[in-house]
Amino acid sequence: MNTLQNQKTNDFNEIVNGRRSIKQYDPTVKISREEMTEILEQAAKAPSSINMQPWRFLVIDSDEGKEKLAPLASFNLDKVMSSSAVIAVFGDRKNYEYAEEIYGKAVEHGYMPEDVKDFQLGYFKPLYEGMSDEQMKDIVLLDSGLVSMQLMLVARAFGYDTNPIGGYDKEKIAETFGMDKERYVPVMLLTIGKAANEGFQSYRLPVDTITTWS
Image 1 (cartoon, rainbow, N blue to C red):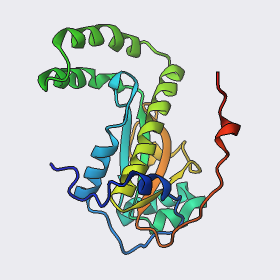
Image 2 (cartoon, rainbow, N blue to C red):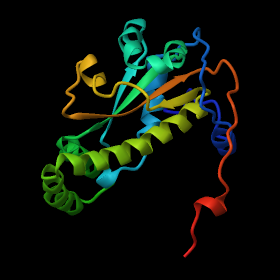
Image 3 (cartoon, rainbow, N blue to C red):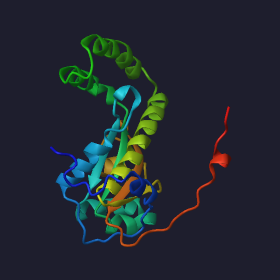
């Protein structure tokens, strides 16, 4: 698949500086699953700890899906219902189950020599398998945060806007959509669609305030 076939711009300044958190979308604009797949494929090139890619996406793009989500995100209902889709980002506590595929395919495609694969699987996979729930949660939250930011920027490149949402019922979302709540850690919701307005600019603290030099 040509993952750039639906991309609208590669202007980095426009992508970064034009991003806003959008509260109202044009409800008539739908994103096809083919195009959403392209967006997610680009977003998933984000970095992750030992390349375990622990993020998992639940794309809620049907009326039925949004109706199920609505009572869990009642404080953000306008964004949810007017968006083209809501992407629920989860972290997979058992991401190491894909280690063989990740490193095996890396060797197959010539990205990694066999001995490096053997070392990674022999050292890091048992390490991940033996982690506590809290240790693994810390890792998947960090990595899933990276992919979420990348997803928002990729959406801009495809001509769409987003809004990250932390205010929803994280206790119920996995089981509401038939997912194992012990395995999948809820990270955030991302609404995505065509903005109905430009959104608001927001003040950013100056670099001198947020940075210490040493």
